Length: 209
Ligand code: CO
Image (cartoon, rainbow, N blue to C red; front, side):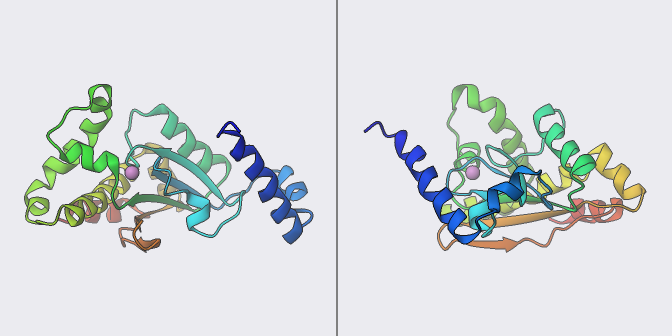
């Protein structure tokens, strides 16, 4: 059997299980989505937003890229955030990094990765800002995890600079921005306590070292 066909078979098994638990699940889902959360995560196959949060389709609006970056000129990302905030009215945006992140490890290495370096340069900037504290960590796994967490904090900060999010705050509205870290080794999600829901909070975050 062609390997890709296992995905189609898996789909049939999965929809059968879902219907068994809730016969009208897909009918309800077909009427529209009203997710309460936007997830900005890494493309890594080990960190799927719905599964690791025990959620079902319909609950989380998702954008993923290598190393969960928030880059202010990324029209794809900005469109997703704008739609989530202005139309879906999500109240919480979660930036989620993870352990053993290939993007983070590549950016911390001295190696070159061809075309990918264009993307990795954004992470290299974050590394450079925090190189002194990170290079004190001798264990390479711990160092890359620490860098992934620093990166989350930086991306939450970048998110807090997005114009239409600031406009929402000026009107006394949501969203709140959160930074989380997923430890692949034990499956645990951790809140990094870098929540931002105002311009003041954003400035506080920028001062954390
Ligand atoms: Co990753």
